[in-house]
Each structure stands twice: as C-alpha cells, then as structure tokens.
Length: 447
Image (cartoon, rainbow, N blue to C red; front, side, top):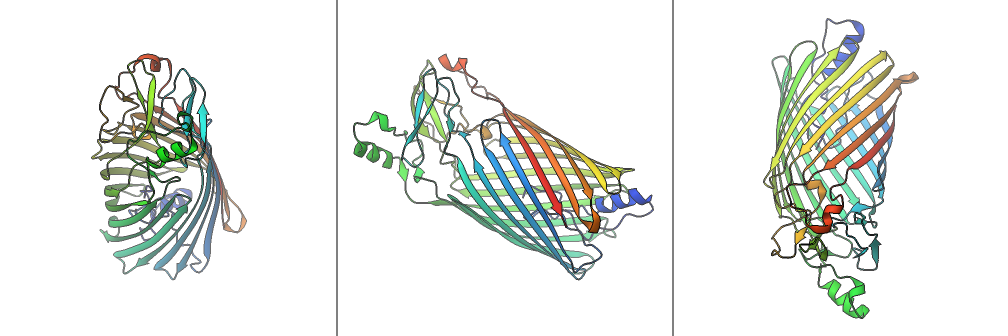
C-alpha cells in the first residue's frame, strides 16, 4: 500500500498536442487514485484487449556489510472486453546477511545468544553488534480485479498472501472510484484489511527480559531453563485496517494533481522479536542485554500530494508525503522522477528522493542501569531520528513486437541520528548511529 500513484484505465485521453508529446501525455493522463490495488502495477488497456501482458523482473538489493536480497517479480494482466481487468503478481525473494541487533559497541568482545537458543555468536571489540542469523525466503501472491460499472463508476477488489519462515500475512482490499467533470476529476475511496501471524524462531521473547547467555551458566540444563524463562512459546498476530480517500484533478492538457489522505490502525504484536537493547552503567559498560517491547497498537495518518506533467520530450512528477502517528514518529518525504525520451523507443529516467523522520517516543539507543525499566523501549534505528536519500537512474527501450526492456540502478544512504540522548563513558568512542548504504539493481522485461 505504498504505491500512491496507481494508474487508472478510465481517465480521458489528452488531445491537441504534437505526436510525441501527445503520446507521453496520454500515458500521463492515466494517473488516478486506485491506491489499494495491492500489486501497484500500472494498468493500460491496449488495443488488443484479449492479450495477456506479462512483466518479469529480477532485483538485487545489497547493504554495505549487511543484508543482501535477491527478488524475482512476475506480473500478468488480462483485459476482458473494455470494462474489466485482472492483475496477478508473484514475488519470491531471498534475504541473507546481518542486521543490527540494537545492542551497542563495547571496548571488549561481546557474546550473544542466537534467537533459537541453540548457539551463540561473538562480536569483536569496537564493532556494532550485528545478528548474523538473518536469512529468510518469502513468497507473495496478489490478485486484483478492476471493473467499470458505467462511464462514471469503477470498482476494484483484491486479495494477497505472503509466507516466510516465521511470518505469514493475508489480506483483502477494495476500492471505488467516481468520475466527475467529464472525467477530469476522480474521487477514490479504498479500504484494506490484513491479518498477520508472527511465529519467531525460538518463540516470542518476554518483554524486556534479560538475554540468557550460555557462558554464564554451569550446565546446559541451567542455561536452557533460564532461556526458556525468557520465551513465550505461542505465536501471536496483528491486524491492520487501512482507509484511503483521494482525488485526482486534470489541470490542463499537460498537468494533473493528485492528493490523498490515509488512515491506518494496527493492533496486536508489533514488537520485533529479534531486537534487543543494551543496559549500560554510567561508564557506558554493558551490564546486560534485554529484549525490546513496543506498544500493541499504532494509529497512523498520512497526507500525500503529487503533480505530474508532460513536457515536450518527457514526463516529470513531484510528490510530498507527510506521516504522523501516536508513537510520535513523524516523517517527510520529497520525491521526483524525470523521464526523457531520447526517441520513440528509448528513454532514460532520473529518480531523486529525500526522507526525514523523528524518533518514536519509546526509542532509546540504550538503557541506563541506574534507571527503572520503562514499559516500552526499542533501540531499532529504523524508528529513530534519521534522514535518507536515494539517487537512481533507469533506462528502457522498446523492442520488436511491443516488448520492452528496462534497467534500473539506485544508490540509497540512510543517516541515523542521536535523538538527544546523553552518551556516557566509553560509548562516546564509538559511532552508535552509523550511516547505512545500499545499492539496488533491477532488470525488467515486458511482453
């Protein structure tokens, strides 16, 4: 549900333009508010409505010295007559590597228990603790049906499901669109519901319980008893309800404007079972490690605006998103794409994105031993103060028979920041908020 510029097959065609500009602007005019179609795949009714349109892509994502992911994506689209479209999507991805556990670096090596409780790993002195057990394979499938009821009304609905080793998600979505003003104005209302089951390796940790480490116990039996005391064996679930209200307005022959408001309510198990916090003394020395705990509900609001325009030899868009929630986490996102057509069959595209967020109210990079344990705490940098930017390029060209190939390369950098916490003792010698860098490469083929 992050794709807020889903294309609409029922928007009017733009006329009275030069041939190349007219082609670009006609594609531009398809943008609308179909925000809850879970695959986010742009729909275009070609002249031959009985043919399948198939897209395949292979993507690589790699963080510097951390997570690596390879993802295969396949989409298929079938138009039935001129008033209904079926969209299908299948995604298979594999993730490996190491992720930040939430613990802080120390002047001596540190030993951590693996999530399963079977084994441990050691982090060298001065190094940011990374959990090297991170690996998984995920399969996700989506299906969506879009139906034109009459010239003014359109509805869509869909289902999706995904499964990985320790997580399962299922969901449904539905939306309705109403055109006004000769289809120059479109209103959209959508909703979605998802049900997720969390079944972590080794069981769910007891909130803020102390990690049991084998080296501290005289026997395997004593260690296992202590480890089991930190676990809840049953799985847990969370539920998400999303609502979205949007409007798209064609401003003139070249420009359109889109705006929407989203409301999301999440309840259930929202804690990351693999994240921990260091409990340190006034010298910054770790006394023990505890498992994080997050609230069991979250209410989020989002506001989004996007304008898209057809230029003489390309298409450009600019967007802004503001989000806020009852965790006091707020964010701002600025993004732009500029696509330039070198010819009728070859284009290049520039992508720029800037993101900034403030920390959740229970985010703490570490806990102080002299203070009582809070009700909620997490050292996950993903909910801390940060800024990030993306720079990307994409090239695509059309082949014989209507086929198309494209190549995309993007650089991403994330800069976590201190949320105002005073850093004690030896921790001042280490970078507790290291910059994260990543590369994304993707090859796509459409036929």
